[in-house]
Amino acid sequence: MNRGGFYKAVFTNPFGIRALLWSKLPLAAFAGLRVARLDESGAEVTLPAGWKTQNPFGSTYFAAQAMAAELSTGAPALWFIEQSGAPVSSLVTAISARFTKKATSQARFVFSDGAAMRAAIDEAVKTGEAVVFTARSIGTQKDGAQVAEFAVEWSFRKRGD
Image (cartoon, rainbow, N blue to C red; front, side):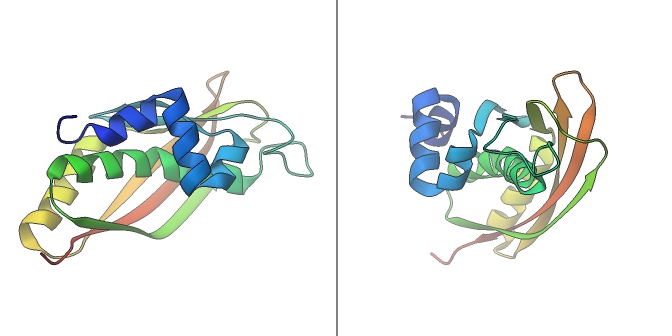
């Protein structure tokens, strides 16, 4: 497989993503998260509504939304790191959210600033210093209504050779 192809293949294959989630993120697998899109611009992750993700108030639990938002930024991060060919560590250092509407149906969390994330990773590779990047993920329901906006802060740093 060409450089940078493994994560793209795994994240976008229905069986591959299930296997990866069950082996590395079983809670996300149980919740039913799926990567609907992964490309140069970012990623889109779907979050089903229902008993596995529901809170006592009949809406989607905020923690399930946070998982979807983080995955929508983490999938591109892993793929871009793989494409760089360099050993780069990645770590979520902060997360914040604003909930704008009660989430009651399937939601999609979209991260759309892949170019800026890739530039941050490239800078970390070039300088050897930690580079902090804040990735924004917007959650919407099927009707198009925005339900949440997350800011996931990533730290990228080239590991020692």
